[in-house]
Length: 448
Image 1: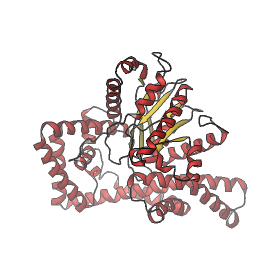
Image 2: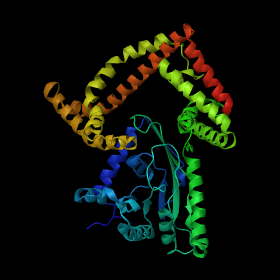
Image 3: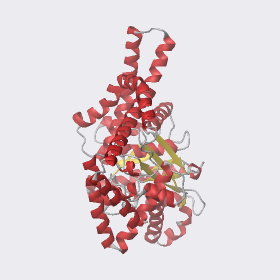
Image 4: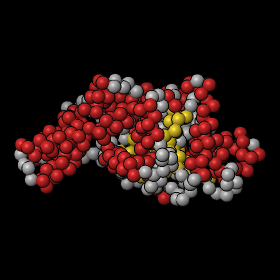
């Protein structure tokens, strides 16, 4: 019987397939700081947790090859024999919480002992240090379990540098939509041996110190909109001011640059909220007005950005969309059912209400249904159109890229129509459009 640390052929095949699909689920897959992952030593990957299974898969996607990452998950998902088999195969151990019953908390000792043994064998753990998931883009208080495990494993090595915690910030372009970006931002390892002597003298002080260190690192690696009262305002302003802060920081406009700009904007807003609540309240009112105007105009914030060449080559862009229309139609026909079925099952059969699970459920359903649909459609293609083997094989592998082309075409067309709408409103000197521009400029000035 294989152990949880064994890197079996079956686990390797499944993990490689899931990671392959994961990288293609996102329109842009970006990894920063890959050089910070050490080799041949025990590590605990510690990501922020806002997107259910996708956070764990993100860690698997950057983990060293042939090193299984054993994760902890809440114990209530181990609710039947089938789930236990699947979770054991996926190398997931149960972690019991107070809500699972105080009588079950003692079972954590067995799990923690397994984790210590895993680290002592130079293997890798994945632990969400926040202890639970939240769909808002902000860091929650860190729980102590990750540090208890790290210190217990390091004590076997004494002061020899061995066990390391790797902070990871994960940023999603959208928590629910397919085809957006993901940024996996890997921080420098936190060396547990640096704290072991303090831990031997005073465990509470050492734990608090390393917890603050990890919290600071995760804050620097992720987008932390640390506000309860003004969270939606923070979201709006970090989007509004992204390009302005990119230019202020003298960065070339890119997904990573905008992520950095949103981080700087968030830090500025946190400072304003703490030091000048009156300005923050004014920003809150302006954000509500701005969002209301955009909704009324049926426009998105990006149309106001200076680098958007709204009127240039509008005829050429329209012509290109018409020329590429057949690719959209073909991609849509091949992918209408594969792309919509996971959403339909999640929405109407599983009836999932928590947005933090949307992507995970759709992804898990999709990695099963996509190849099945493509295989069935290839067999139909063989029976109805062409039975040449290499043409059928080519058709099978072209279906998904054509689907992504179709989605890109649809997105580009929506933006094209928005630009036309913006140009028409500008020509009509729409009061609401001018007011939205004025409010946006006023917000940027207030935080610059």
